[in-house]
Image: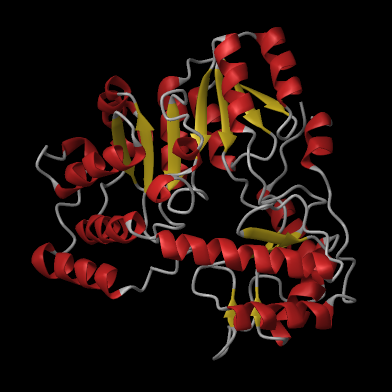
Length: 395
């Protein structure tokens, strides 16, 4: 067993790492100025500041302040959160939906509550860290399969037996989709249940924005869906969609639900207002898809390797963290602000500058972003892309 590393040693290593960047990657970075293009937010439909949402939140604050401030296990059936959960269940074509504090809490709480200790949980190498945290909380056995590799998944199941399969429907750095129909077929052949994290597809894809699972007609075949509502739903919450028995069980057995305060009334009111807009948001979704295609095609034309993105998430991978810092600084100076990703958010060799496209962009603004990328493309090696498949094979 490796010797534990002291906190002092870890702090020293962090200081040395930051010094190696040669500039500001996170702290010390200049704030976007007027007219800057900010592609760091996950408000994909550009509705976070919509008057309908803001007015509902303000009204809830004035009516009840911060509410009862108690565990969600104590919420009455008539609470507005329960009404929103029922609306979301109908929206998602799911038997039951439970809301919680965040997407992290949704994944950790669900896996911790349903996976027996020592049971296998097959998790994609690029899946969100919260799924791994849930496996740890359940004291289950994480079995990592190569990214989007159903053959590797099937071989692992043959070796370790049936359990849960945990995937993201859209991966948050690469911008590529899960081969969900094939994953579901593997699950059904092998007696596994699928946990699909819809954080980056909810509100964006599917009928009325209900996500990739309903878009593919798989709502009845995916046992569990989770999502952060801090993306297209522009709020602070997470959800779990599941059958009614599990939905009744989670508030009393998922630790994040039991040991955290319930959502605040103005959060619930804001999310209900967002759902109103999402359900009639086809034009916003169409603009988002158009903007994403324009940016992807333009970057490819400039020589950027943005593989494997096929979505509104587009990442530039310049190489190491020092190259990421140079690229970010150059784009910041051009008035284009992306979100930097470094270890542990990505693998040690997977530094990326992520652009989150949104529906509020115009063709002219996309052209401005492309002009900035053309101006800085010699700043770092922007043709690189490291595969998470190799990372998984090394585990």
